[in-house]
Length: 178
Image: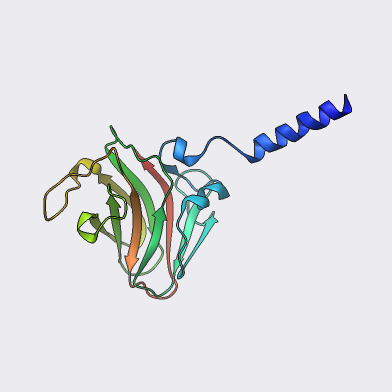
């Protein structure tokens, strides 16, 4: 009986540590409530991510991103469900604590290892304070060809800043599809 109890306890602990609720298996949604969500952000030299209670619009945590000088860096999400059929918008809340407006760029693609001409790009001036961004996915078109984003095969989601000043801070929360 003691061996059976030990085996059951081990299986319960293993199940708790290895959740089947992977982000790839659920809708694209980031509230930064768990450390596990940080595993789906591509980290690069020149940026520092941390969960914070300093800014939040949904739940108890948001994400603080501190940028250091580099060409373009920011929030790049990977390992998500690629089929966004039926999805109309991507939304995100961003806070700019600086005294000046910063331009935030959004990039997506529906092609693996896309060339620059295959990126769907937008930019948003982030005024100081809270900025709520809504991106209508059906309006995304490539400048050269006019081709629309194939929402069945979304491969890339990035929010970034070109050549940020050292120490630039941005806060993110409630990144989701609707």
